[in-house]
Image (tube, rainbow, N blue to C red; front, side):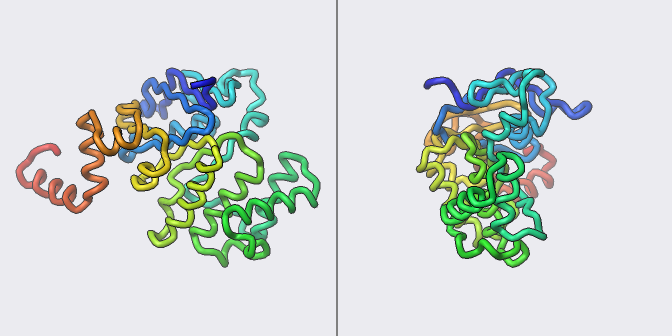
Length: 263
């Protein structure tokens, strides 16, 4: 692999006495799609937020595009312009139209003129299949449409890397497919993507690599076929069995409670 687009080295993050990340090392190459999976509290979202310094690492180094974000002298705003971020919640301005939600950050951050910003906004709304919603307000859109607008807003800033933090977790199940289709399109276009997700179907189909985290460390890192299809570690197998068969997991928990064992 050539110089990684994202490199995390010896990353630790603590919140008070809670040691969330415990020495994470990770590299993501240009054009790679890496899905990060794991149980709640495993540190996966914290890791993602450390990649663009929304969370300040306690210790360790983070590089994006060869630039160290954790260097005290770095121009963090300049580096962040290269990183698109999509959250669980859509964070759209409710008082602005869809088009205005896309043009405002371009004009303020990238200093684009009105006409250029509008052109880029229209192109990216077309990419996510929402060109006809340019003049609509967020409140008139479904959750899935709002998330696709949020993706288009990130793309309008011409990022080199896209970070997704559980982008479908706030959506009704029937709305998930359209959002995942947009993410598949980006993967096909060669976008470097780091995706925290519980969508195992997406990870199997789209990811080049799957990273399983638990207890603040990377337990397993490999192809989807290996990590999801034939995991080497018991912790990975246990997580996937509960995720892929929640009914069985619930029965198992109730049985464990009755017999006094620890699952």
